[in-house]
Amino acid sequence: MSDSAGIRAIDSHSVHRITSGQVIVDLQSAIKELVENALDAGASTIDVRFQNYGLKAIEVVDNGTGIPSQDYDSIALKHYTSKLSSFDDLTRVLTFGFRGEALSSLCALSDGVTVTTATASDTPMGTILEIDRNGRVKSRNGKVARQRGTTVAVSTLFKPLPVRRKELERNIKREFHKTLNLLYAYALVPCSGDKGVRMTVTNQAEGGRKSVLLKTDGTPSLRSSVTALWGTRALDNIVNLDLSFDVEPDKVAVRRQSQGNPDREKILSSATNVKVQGLVSKFTVGGGRTASDRQFFFINGRPYNPGKVQKAFNEIYRTFNPNQSPFIVADFILPTHVCDINVSPDKRTIFLHSENNLLQALKVRLLIF
Ligand code: ADP
Ligand code: MG
Image (cartoon, rainbow, N blue to C red; front, side):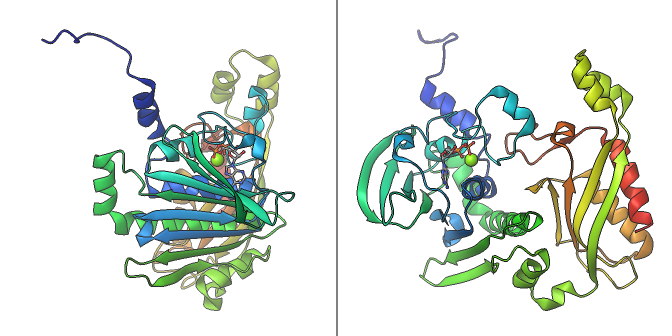
């Protein structure tokens, strides 16, 4: 046994590399974080550019607020965020980001991150920041032309983690497909609000050919986004989804969740109104699709892994149309106190209060839909 054996702290650099792996676990989560930052910055145009399907580089270009110069040195430091002012805010988060982990993780997990940004008062000039693995700005050039907005470019994702890099290279087809699927969800997100976002996704192949993979027109209409993404035929047999129902609280869950706090118990004990808005295939034979590839679920405009909710939709649909799957875009509008987005680091698993009661109520509404 060597002299150095025994318990000792691992150096902070290694800790950072390990924990960064929890937010950015694959190509999909890297893209998700960058697109969410663009949406949080109020962008109305977002370009997502892949080089060699993301193996070489990924770049997200937005026309949002830009980053003010006093923030340059801290944007990529761990737990720096401009979005949350106090811990209380965690119960009612309206922005996608609030943990300040994405940029610092991308720096730790890639071969380099370059941020080009300009605020309204900076334009027509912008600044290029090159950021090192520890999130420190290693060079800054304030003399580039840039309209208002921010570009974040990440090269060779997972280079510092050889095993994960190999995995990405080996599975790139599947990883890219998964990523593109999430981008479809983000291309539909803003339609539940009142402003549209023009999203364009391109890939530059190794040989140099660039192809457009997805494009929306930026109008705030869900139907026109669906048409832009999949063509006019995509709206055949599709009707508006518009449900509103109350969900009774689950008494056991209320007790567990309120942890003896009477105010919280009171809030959680009353019935919750849930609205479900979007588009769905007609509940008739022949009204659906042969595959369940176009099903997108959101909670308050945030894409999420639906699990049981998706299962409930498909189950009920198949009682009407046993051999097909519905097209679904479903945005669940609920008060923020009944959903917890802090369950998983990627915020895609969302805890729903009284989920079983919600599922029951949903199924009943879908049956009479
Ligand atoms: P979070 O989104 O949780 O705040 P991030 O690591 O994703 O954390 O980003 C850190 C900070 O960098 C953000 O809070 C924001 O101030 C700034 N930032 C990142 N991307 C953009 C962007 N596209 N436009 C404007 N500001 C950005
Ligand atoms: Mg973020």
